[in-house]
Length: 492
Length: 101
Image (tube, rainbow over all chains, first blue to last red; front, top):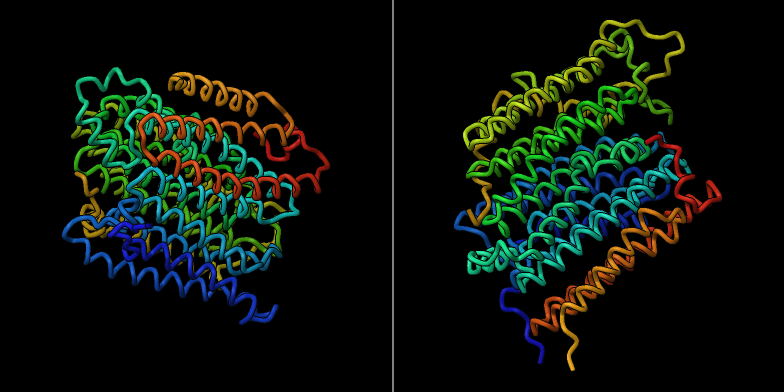
């Protein structure tokens, strides 16, 4: 006789379920509700579903005050960490949809499947944050990746986009192979795939654990797999090509949501399953953080395409977030999550300006196109300048506060040298972020400058929202940080 | 007579290395594809071997998930290869170099 686990309780993963159902509803609405010329209305169905998911997440927030709730027989876990990630992802996705609505029409690639794929991808990311088992982690990892492979190639038959999709697919699947092999070895070494179970095994066998090579190799391979996804140097080679070739709206989504989900998974795995081995992984990750910050920022200096520049910038910011994980301690999770939120707003804002400047399918991505922008589009110029200052880390914007929390944490937990490297890397980053600002304000526009779009419609709304978010997150940082603080991992 | 677990581990490691080498060295997209599948199946073998060794079921259940995911991945991957083949008439990874880097 088949017996179901008594706690087969789907309530805790409700936000992800709402998102999946919305994805299906978008497809159905496209098929039955809207005629071809009204197809753009599907975005409102998708946004409506996100609002429901937002309300559900808020509703669950109060319920988990007494500690984490397990779901689906212990495969998933609901705590404030997962819910905080859900809130970030819902916000990011909503802004990406506002960005996409007109962009897709202009690029002539508007199909309702776009929103469906984004929603399916987000559901995978949400489940990643709610994983309590390597099995859930693996399936959600692939759920969001496979949807993203398609999205990267969405502008086909544009060769650049197809190539971006293919490169992302091959390197993503390659890294998934390492990730999976790492899970298999961890399972072999500990006999369980439960994150808590792994931690208990390590605790129970503390004396002999340093001789358990298979466990260390497994952990290393898991780190390689997740390192690919969040684009740590030396696993970053795919990032600039994929970011450049993919449609800009998809790039904005990849740069922010994937990073949030990837780091959430890293935090889950390292702090829930391997906290006792922190001596081993923090050294490796510190090295990766240095490589990532220096490598990302230095290569970004030589870029002349804003999408590639933002790709290297996203690599560099992954390095800063990694510092929080290395430093560890009670505030590591909140510092990392706060930075992810700040980074997401700033980067989405920069991409929103790039998308708003699009006109009639030609993308405005070369640095020369930004020369003298102040005379042509003053509003968008000021907005982009704010995002560039925020990404550099100027006070009082979001990027400064995020870096402050992370570097402060590093200094207090004995990783002062890492904070110094991070500060130096931020100084290097000023070289390319501020170069754009100089171009926009101080250089004359070239004679053959391309036609530009303006800040009207939903893309303009997205610019305004991210701008307000970037400024407010900088000024009113402490309430949000306290919210992130209460999103601490359950096990700690 | 039971085959010792080490043999399975060795075979699986060999398969995995072949897969990695195939991805890194071969230039034909389809071969690269097969190499990635080899990496997945090396992990599957490890899961099943350990599940048997430990008398548990987790590993075997995991293999079903891996196979499902791999099937979905193949569907998407082949579609992407087809799309690029239509544009460029090639299955050589070196020809996919419109994007510098």
